[in-house]
Structures are given as C-alpha cells and as structure tokens.
Length: 354
Ligand code: 13P
Ligand code: SF4
Image (cartoon, rainbow, N blue to C red; front, side, top):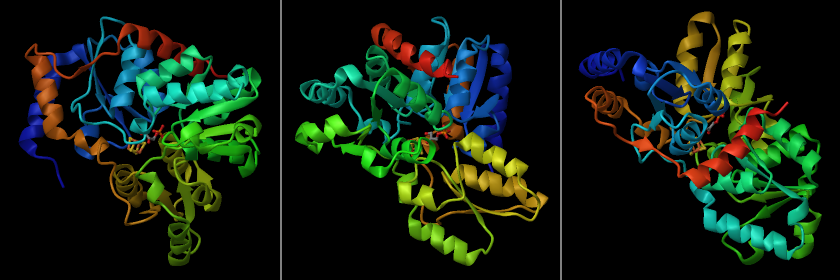
C-alpha cells in the first residue's frame, strides 16, 4: 500500500530538521515506507561496517532488529546513540540462544574435555550476551556474507566449531563451502541434558550446531523448489543460507540479501528468478527489475514477512524522528560496558577476517 502522505511529509520534515545529527540505516527486509528514508541500506554485514565507519552523526536510527542495533551500539563511539524505532523489533532466532543456555553448553563441552579445541562462531543474529561469550572464548561473529571465511578462520584456531544460533547457516556453510559431510555436524539441543548428545558425539563432531533457526526462512521447503521449477521452466532459484539444507542443496545460487540484490542486478534481461528470502525484499526487487524484463517471483507464496522486521513502520519512524528533533531521546539501545567490550572483540575479529 502507498505510504500515508501526511506521515511521509512529517518524516521528511523531522529528518530535515535533524540534518547531520541523524543517520538512518535500513536493513533490506524493511518496508518500502521506511526504506525511502534510509541514508544507507544493506545486509547485516554492510550495516555493521557502516555503523563502525562512524558517520559523524549524534543519532544512528537503526531500521532493523534489536541485535543489529546492539551491534551498532558496540561498534560506534560512546557519544553516539543508536535508536531502534520499536523496541519490540526482536528476532526469534536470536531469542533461541540465551546467555544461560550458552553458559550451560560450555559447561557440557568442558565436561567432555573439549573446550580447549572448540572455537565459538556466532551468527550476527544473536544477542550481545552471546557475542560477548564468543569474544571471551576466542571466537568470532559472522554474517551470511562471510560465514565461509569465519569458519575457515575458526578451523585455523582450533579443531572444532560451536556454531550458534542458526543451525542452517552453520550446516550449509560447512557442507557447501568447506566440503564437510552432514555426519561431521551434530545438533546441540539446549532443552535436553547434555544437548541431547553423547560425550563421544561431542568429541568427534567437527561442527557442533546450536538448535536454532529462522522462522521465516525455515518455511521454504524442497517442494517449493520443485513446484517453482515445474511452474516456470528455466527459472533460477536463489535462496538465503538461513534456509534448510535440502532447500539450499536444490537451489542454483545461495547468498546474503546483498548478494541476492547484486545477482539480480547482473542478471540478463529475460531471465527468470525465484527468490527464497523475506517478502519485503523480494517484492521490492520484483518491482525494481520488472521494467528491465527480469521476472522475479517469491519462492513460496505461503511464506510471509518477517513480523519483527515489519514492526518498524512509518508511524514508528515518524515518532522516533520527531522525538529526536524535539530533543527527546527515545528507544536508545545501550549495551552494558562489560558485555560490549567482549562482544566488540568478536565483532572486530569478524571485521578483520581476510
Ligand atoms: P543478511 O542481511 O545478512 O543476509 O541477513 C538476513 C537476516 O535474516 C537478517 O536478520
Ligand atoms: Fe530473525 Fe529471521 Fe527475521 Fe532475520 S528474517 S530478523 S533471522 S526472524
């Protein structure tokens, strides 16, 4: 639906009033009505880098989800404030690994006698606590665009990896990019004693995968790939690595949101694409590339928007910008110093990956 013209005007006026004081970052899964006000858009890696590049703004308004705003807070200077327009914009995957559960898991690994050779690798989609745990234990953060490099780095530091919280990104990267077999991976279930694994399994696995997943990407199935290939002969299937292994294995291309956009920019006119990622992005790409004669469809019509990304809407953005313009600081995300220091270690290891 087109954005409410009154709200568009209010957002524009508040942003103009704030001028250089505000910098708006927008993740690719954000609504069009929000994206139109972003100074930069990107995948989670690009946005972390853009925040770390420290634009000379007092306020970074992060149109994305909570873990992204936390990471931006950790990577920006102390006098810069990161603002999340709706505090309820979380991520169900990030919530699948709590600090207590991860500490308990580390105890289980210690009990198995393997902590000296396990390197934790945490997906960006995790709370600052989990990133701090990772930094403390010599590990790195990764995103979907550098997971392969992060894993290669981790296997230079140790012999086993604890990958959390997204089992799919961990498995897909290990198997697709590092040539491991599915048997090299075990699944650690935080709701079971010992993660549901024997000591032997823990000792022999190369990849210990946390049992977390994305509720949006988890809904694409092998059937959706088969159906679209039948419906649209010659279609290129391009999916995000948060999809299940069988979906990724059946796809033609796999990559982060930024990768998906670049692949479609480079695609020839007349090509056909089925995209397996969040719907706001797919709709925007379908509209953008239709005039160039590129046909872009959603991989599975039953999969919907990311409901937490969608919480950031134009009314929340207007409220945020107007509050800041009036001198009221709202929804500031601030990670406590001890957590931030350890999390920063893990984030900076990621930014330094070759
Ligand atoms: P990327 O933008 O890094 O591809 O991540 C997708 C995602 O799920 C963010 O929550
Ligand atoms: Fe989290 Fe999935 Fe939404 Fe990304 S798309 S923010 S991983 S729930």
